[in-house]
Image (cartoon, rainbow, N blue to C red; front, side):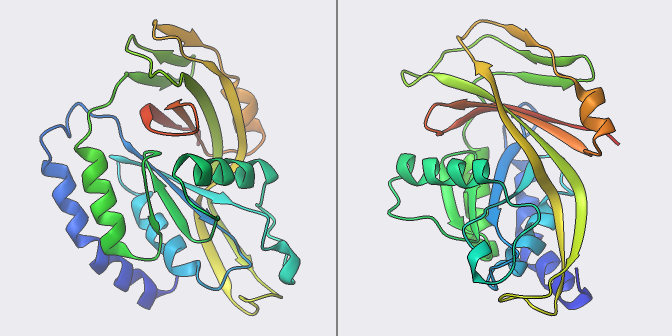
Length: 239
């Protein structure tokens, strides 16, 4: 991240420090922030920088999800996954949006904002922090433990996202041609682990294999089907 952009983003995020004093901060799970981005989108770098700042926080699970629908304009994003585009399109349906776009941030599966607008992101985070977690999720080297809770009428799914801590790319073509861009918490693997029935459950995950494949972290999200509201989440560093 360039120094001027880093200074701008850090200043813009100063208001987010208020989140640390929220009443439920000690017991609430980290807020899940998904940034839908692309190296082929000239509007995305400020949002990528904002997500990089959020990735340093302990009360946020920040994830960079690269989509593939900008690949046609001259630069193929090396981190784009069709499955992540499908997830964003599913959000468009559940959030009643007519289309998908970058840079879109989805906060706790409930609030979506333009990811390059720090004030909007801060407001969404504040609203998410005001909603208590519906289920406890604990992710360790041995696997994931999910507590008991009430399942929404739509049902609930358990998702695993494996990510890399940081990547930098020299973009040679497309809207960002000639720029060196940095990305934090880049999702490289996305899969459904199963359903959550409301009972406590334990699921095994081969994190050793993820580490051997070069992944830096793992996040598990228990989420209302749709996808919709995040009910609980946890992350673990693999480095």
